[in-house]
Each structure stands twice: as structure tokens, then as C-alpha cells.
Image (cartoon, rainbow, N blue to C red; front, side, top):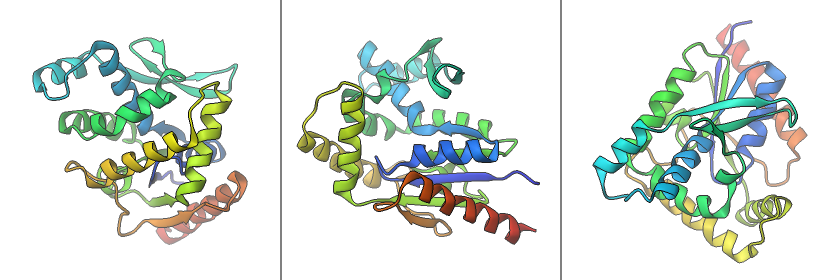
Amino acid sequence: MERIIIAIDGYSSCGKSTLAKALAARLGYAYIDSGAMYRAVTLYFQHRHIPLDDEIAITEALDNIHIEFQYNPVLQQNETWLNGESVENAIRSLEVSNAVSPISAIRSVRQSMVALQRKAGQNKGIVMDGRDIGTNVFPLAELKIFMTADSEVRAIRRYEELRAKGEKHSLEAIRQNLSERDRIDTSRAENPLHQAADALILDNSALTPEQQLEWALGKVKDSRTQKD
């Protein structure tokens, strides 16, 4: 059966990665977490104190950033590697979350990451999630899904995720973080977050991971039927 590109966009903490990983596993596709790429860049910038108003320093930093995804057989999942080091846990901290949207809005950063993302999808058979996958990275993707959820549901999900990792942050701090990220993501000049005209909306406020996976698998079947 012909392989397709599946683009999943949406707001922070809507479960995009959860759905994308499960969908890729079920279909035997590659999974690329574009958000992890921007988080890795953010971590690099933070550690090296790269000024966000210095384009020369940003360009030099991007030239020295190498991101890849490696499968961890123990955890049975892909991990993000930055310059030969696993940074999967480090990039999920609230400190990185607070800084990733402004850095992601920088034009040269987005151009660099989009080039890598498009290269990863050249042979199709890929599920990629992020903010501009269906609108900018893969505008011709055979299936586009735009995910959303109630803002309080999103905050609670993020709170529980961080607590499970041992990070202690107030629910209010997480609410503020998500609100600010939404504001930056939807208003930035370079490829802002918005629903593609041909994207299917998935509000998973009241859905389990299994229910949203079944929904998405049905849409994959529909897209293949329409293509045939």
C-alpha cells in the first residue's frame, strides 16, 4: 500500500506527540517530533547564552547543532540527541518550555529546522507533529490533523507529566506558560500556528489515547481510499 505523509499540528500539550507516536508505530512509519528539534535548539542556546538579537551568533550556533532521533531499546521509544548526547529529558523541562516559543519564532531557526524536516519526509511513510507541518513544512501532505483541547485539560496534562518526572511546578505557572506559548505561536511573523484549510480538527479534551488513535486510523483509511 502506498505510503503517505501525515502532518499533525496543534496547540501545546494537546497530545500531538502521543498520537503521532502511536500512529507511526501502528502504520510502521517513521516518527519525527519537530517540537523536540526546536527544544534541542533552545537547550543549546540556553547553555551557550546565545543572544536572540544577534543573527551572526545565531547562524554560527545553528551551524554547530546536529539533531537526530535514536531508538532506545530499553525504553522502547525514540530519543532526541543533540551533538551526540541524549537530551530527551532535558528538553522537556519547564525552563526550556518557557523559552522555546520565542526561539522558534526566529526566522533563521525555523528555516534551518524546516529544511531538515522536509529532508526527513522525502520518501514519505512519515508522521510529523508540530506547529506548521501541514501549513508550511508539508502543505501537500495526504492527511493533515489539527489538534486542540480545553485549556484547563491541557494544563492539567502538562502538570501531571512534569510531576511524573519529578519536577514541581504550580498549576498556575503551567497555565501561564501554555497561555504565553499559544500567544507567541499564533502571532509570530514566521509561519504562525493556524489550521490548514484542508486539515481535520481533532478535539481530544474527552478522548483517551486509544480513542484518538482509532479516530486517526479511520482518517488514514479514508485518505487512502480517496487517493485510490
